[in-house]
Image (cartoon, rainbow, N blue to C red; front, side, top):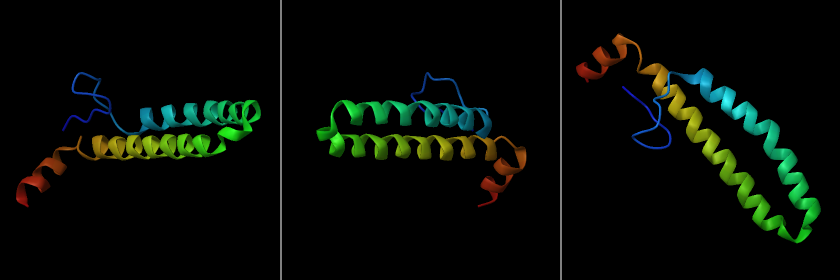
Length: 84
């Protein structure tokens, strides 16, 4: 099964490792951006909170897609799916 995150034309995921790498990069950059945003405009806290929740929701979706991509690579997955 080919699993893509962005669209049908996006590169298919090969498994969980590329997803984890992307999530790690986002977790290293986002907090600094969020902190600076809050320092620049403390009144934007409610919007910032929504942005943080949205970012983590996206990362969770990416993780699930990576798990699905990796789990469905094996031939035994397809065989098991056909039996059900």
